[in-house]
Length: 112
Image: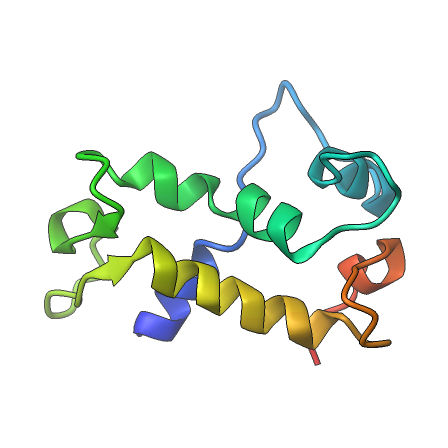
């Protein structure tokens, strides 16, 4: 269950005011330096917004009260560092050519 929660934090929920029409559109929003590729840091920063939004007391830790209810037992706390490590693992799985960057094709592909 903890793994599912960590993965759920990885997917941004974009508002209706900012629809994403294509992978290229998504890439351009994640691409902070606009170089046409996504670095690990850009990936982690973009996909950490949900963690940041849930961290009500801004202590870098999602305790059980800050995590969404699942109908199961209380969840273990999740640190920002643990969350970013999970994102780094996912990035590595999506970086199919192992060049340290994600292009539009890799970004659109599920992790291997």
